[in-house]
Amino acid sequence: MNGFTTRHLILNLTADFEAHQLAGSVELHLDRSDTWATELALDTRALEIHSVETSTDAHPFAPTTFSLDADDPAFGSPLRIAMPTGANRVRIRYTTSSLAKGLQWLTPEQTAGRSHPFMFTQAEPIQARSFLPCQDTPSVRATFDATISVPPGLVVVMGAEATASDRERGVYTFHMPQPIPSYLIALAVGDLTFRPMSARTGIWAEPVTVDAAAAEFEDTEAMIVETEALYGPYRWGRYDILVLPPSFPFGGMENPRLTFATPTVITGDKSLVSLVAHELAHSWSGNLVTNATWGDFWLNEGFTVYLERRIIESVYGKRRADMDAVIALKDLAEARANITVARDRTLQPDLTGRDPDDAYSIVPYEQGALFLMWIESKVGRPAFDAFLRAWFDEHAFQSATTAECLSFLRCRLLDQQPGVVSDAEIHEWLHSEGVPSFAVLPTSDAFECVAEVMRAWLGGDERALATEATAWTTQEWMHFIDALPRNLPMAQMSELDTRFDLTRSRNAEIAHVWFRLAIATKYEAAFAAMERYLVSIGRRKFIVPIYRDLVVTPSGHALAARIYAIARPGYHPLAQTTIDALVGVS
Ligand code: BES
Ligand code: ZN
Image 1 (cartoon, rainbow, N blue to C red):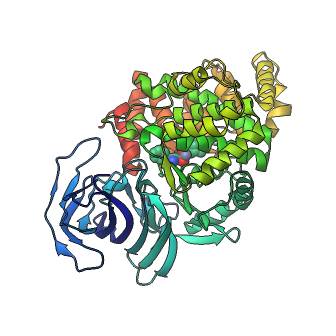
Image 2 (spheres, protein in one colour):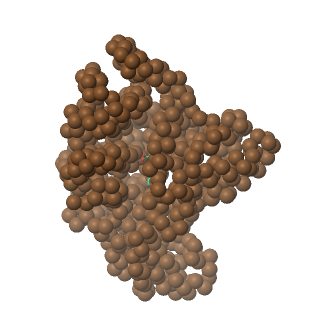
Image 3 (cartoon, helix red, strand yellow):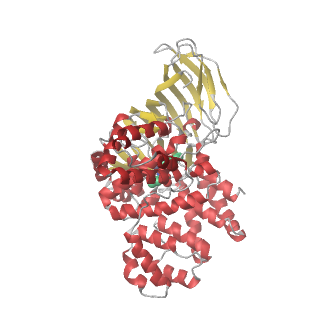
C-alpha cells in the first residue's frame, strides 16, 4: 500500500445541516512498510483540503506540503502528501462538498417524523473517500476514535462503541476496537431513539418507527444464536439495527455493530426479515473475512446470501428459505439480461479503471450462493459447515482474494473427497455468464401450489383464489403476481385488485411486482399509487426496475420523466446517478 498502511484513525467532525457539510479533521496513524517512502497517497473525492500536517509518533505536528491530482470520474483525486523521514502520522483538515456521493442530507419532510433533519453515510464500495481522506481499499483495516458534533437535540450513531454522548450540547464520542476497512465506517445523525430487543441487540430509529421496527425484528437474537452455532462466535460486541428514512438507497448495509436498514421491510408480519439475516451474516462473511478487492465482491455477497438462507432455514424453516431462493433465481436471470458488459455477467467482473458501482449487480450474490450450494450438495452439509467455520476462524479480521479462497477450498475440503468436483466445473462457476447446466437449483413446494392455483384461475375457475390466496405469505404473492402473463386482461387485473387491494398494498415487495404488472398490462388505476411509491421510497432495487419498465414506451417515458422530476430531489446521489442514465435529467 504505497509504503504506508493505516492502523488507526481519529476523526473529529462537525455536521453542518445548513451547508450540508462535514468539516473537521482526520488523523491517520500509519505503519511504514518502506522506511524510505517520501510520499503518502490517500483517496479523496470532492473534498476541500485546508491543511496537512505530519508527525512522528506522539511528537508535535508540523505542516507539510501536499497536492491533489486532477479528478478522475471513477476514483476521485489522490491527495499526495510529502512525508518527512520517519513520519508516521498525518492530520488533515478538510470539508466535504455537495458532491459527496457517500452522504445524504435529508430535510425534515424527507424523514418519517417530519420534524428534524437527517444525514447518513454510505461508504461501500468507494464512497468513504467523499467524506474522509483515507486508504479507501477493502484490504486495509484500521481501528478508530471519533468525536462528532451536531446541532443540539440531534442524536449521533456510528458503527462503533458509543463512549460518551451529550444531546444538549450535541457532542458524541465513539471508539471502534475491531479493525475494519474504510467501506464499513458509518455515521448517521437524526431524531433517533433506542429500543432494546435483547442484551446485545436493539433498534435505533425515529420515534414514530421504533416500536414497529422492534416488533418486526424481534427474532434478531435468535438469528445470532443460530449463526454462532453454525459459524462461530459473533465477534463485534453489540448488534443493533438503525432504521433509516425511506430514501435509503439500499435494502441494508452491514455496518459493523450497527446494520443500516430500509424501513420498507417493516410489513408487520416479519416476512421480509431475511434482510436482517443477510446483514447479520456479513458479520462473518465480509466484515470478518473481507474481499481483498472489489473484483472479489462475490466473497462478501455470495457467501453472505448462502449464510442468509441457512439462517432463515434455521429460524423460519426450509419452506421459507426455498421460496427466497427461487425468487432470487428469477431475479438473477432478469439481472443478467440487463447487463451489457459480458464479464459483469460472471462472478468476477473486470473492474480495471472502473468505479465498482458501475458493475454492481446481483450476479455475485446469487451465482456465488448457487456455487456454494452446489459444493454443499457434493460434499455434504457437515463437511461444508466445518469448512466455512474454518474459513472464518482462520481469516478473521483479514482480507482474502478469490485465488486464496479457492486454494483454501481445495486443500481443506475438496482434497479430502477426491473426484467429487472437477477443476473444469469450478472454472465454469467462476467464468460462466450463466448458471452452469450442472447447478443444483432451488425448488419450492409452496410455489408449485401457487402455480396450480394460478393455472386454475387463468383457466376460468372463479373459486380458485378464494380458498388459497387468502392464506398466502408475502413470498407466495410475489411469486403469483410475477408469474402472471404480462398481457393479463383488464378485467382480471381489476378483479385481483378489487379482491386483494393490491394497488393499496403497504408491502413494498408486493406493491413492486404489482406495479410492474400494471405497467405491462396498462392498468392505469394503479398509476397514482405507483407515483406515490416512487416519490416516497428511494430503495434502488424497488424503483429502478419500475423506471426501466416505464421508459420503453413513449407514454411510459413521459410518465417516468414527470414522476422523476418530483422524486429526484428525495433520492440518494447513487440512485440519482442510476436513474439519470435511464430517464434523462430534465
Ligand atoms: N453490502 C450490501 C450493500 C451494498 C453493496 C452497498 C455494494 C453498496 C455497494 C448489502 O449487504 C446488501 O447486499 N444489501 C441488499 C439486501 C440484501 C438482502 C440482498 C440490498 O441493499 O438490496
Ligand atoms: Zn450483502
